[in-house]
Image 1 (tube, rainbow, N blue to C red):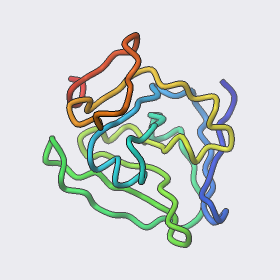
Image 2 (cartoon, rainbow, N blue to C red):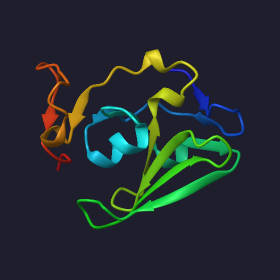
Image 3 (tube, rainbow, N blue to C red):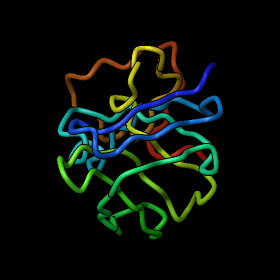
Amino acid sequence: MSEIEGGCNCGAVRYRLSSDPIAVAVCHCANCRRQSGSAFSVNVIVAGDAMSLSGDLTTYEDHDTESGQPVLRQFCATCGSPIRSLSAASPKVAIVKAGTADDPGRFTPAIHVWTSTALPWVEIPASLPQFPRNPR
């Protein structure tokens, strides 16, 4: 896959991913639903050092996590677009919101997590791996 670029609604934040995603995951947890403003969040998981970023991010430190370690939910300081999450429990990865990519159609989800809290009307393809919580 070639370099991936993306950014926020107003253009104040831009990023570049210099390596292929480790995974593309759909998360159904309540925190991701709230951050995305939707029924779930589609996340592109990449090596943290493969992401370069310009612009000002604001961080919400989310302590309501299964591990008890915070997740830094980062968004554009100007328009509020969610950009990425950084998890203290997985410090070597960045979890980038797929919808912020310039070409989000290239990210096909390969896994669904937190299916135990999925909304009842969301249909999860039976052919994809599913985990009631975070995979171990």
